[in-house]
Image 1 (spheres, rainbow, N blue to C red):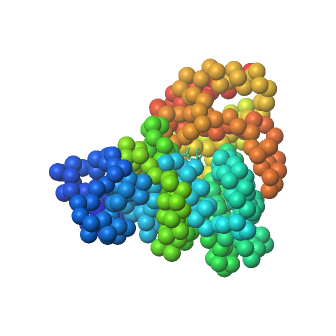
Image 2 (cartoon, rainbow, N blue to C red):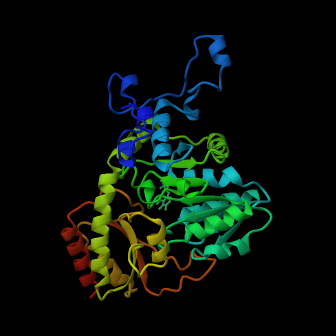
Length: 390
Ligand SMILES: Cc1ncc(COP(=O)(O)O)c(C=O)c1O
């Protein structure tokens, strides 16, 4: 089936085949990695056609990036997508596509930490006014709009604290004010939420996470509507952001099994979250599909499922005891990422990071990524860890 044929097929069929071009690659199911910087033109007339040729120079696009971008745009319901070298660079692309010196942007207070750092250390330095808004602000975001507001950036659920924003109310207010919207959709992926179809201008994903899914790739992607895409593409090109051919190949390969993996991540994570919510050492479970998570109602309203990553707050804050918990884990390791096949823990405290409002929860916060191991083993590992707290 060619990518062209797949357009009218159902979502999972498109997820399985979009971007595949066996006719062009001797029957190969997967588009092979194209290692290209220089692309030569055999005649002056051919050279003169640039930029109206599919490929002119490696940084501007290759058959590897085209295949990955075509597949992502298809499942996002986007006009087009552009691949970048990491999720963070995809976020920077979305931010710089719409804001210039003197503009104001609204960034959710529970954004991914390095997104905030990028705002502070790059955007602010170049004269863009960044204001953080409380993630549960909903329709009241309209009070923050100024004549020079160019973008509202959302992340749902947010990093570490997992509040699920009222994306519908924020979008409606932004549309009314003529302000562009973007969202970090790495947690849900288009399987569980499709921002562009929902009406958001730009969807950003760290494809490093669930899309690639095997903890061996750094990759980002920005998808946009027809109206928003030219600015996004221009920003990625001018920032010099492009993804390596092996990474694009692995990203596209990961996409083929995304659905199967996400179903299992979802099942395992829900089981683990419910188990943890019954443990006396656990103060609160921040899983969007559980009522204990702020914005659970929004998750129910807008999302089709939940992935494998959520937060917990422990009563215990003593460092020695916490070290006993983490050091003795058998399945879980500590790591900065999530979305891979393996379970991971990430201890970090949101309180000092937040500025729009105080994160009032006392206790010790920890992100849990539930992998594809046997869920009974995962729960036993966590149960033993909690026991070590004493
Ligand atoms: C929510 C979120 N967005 C974006 C990123 C950045 O992705 P990358 O590590 O691919 O740059 C991360 C990384 O952890 C993340 O958690």
